Amino acid sequence: MRTKSFRTLLLAGAVALLGTGCDSLFTVEVEAERICKSENDLSFPASPPIAGSVEQSFTIPLGDFASALPEDADVETELRLKLFDATASTDISGIERASLSVRKPGSAEYVLLGEFRRTGTGGSTNKLQLTSSGAVDVLDLAKQEELEFRFQATGSPPTQSWTADVEVCVGAKASANYFGLLF
Image (cartoon, rainbow, N blue to C red):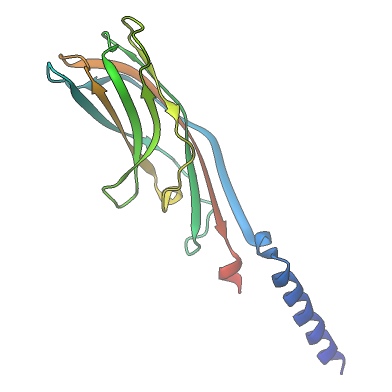
């Protein structure tokens, strides 16, 4: 009779845990506040003499960011642009819009991370900063060793090839729920 009481107690405890939403007790979170990469003399192609656009891709290594996450669990991710700062070798004041996107792993689709829109005429400049468009969820982001980013600029970019010193920082967060693996 003692064994039956113990089983009833365990069952009641399990039901109580499940009923109160305690599956969050089995969640692991990994966060990197800032993962940065500097690229000196990053080359950009010339733009057509009339309104045009330029595009450049580069990667940022994540390292062992996701090593603590389980292999078989569903992973939710969050990626946020913290900083995009470019100092060009020439005047880039003709750039009216610019954006930074990240490619979804295993896909041709890019997701917008940040953008720039020129307001008014501020004269010549060789600096460009993008503003974050908010956190994005990129499927299986945390399980990648590196991520591919794409910079695009439209308007009247320089009509000759140019270079820029670029610094990019992103914040990454991932969480995995072990609850489904345990029960």
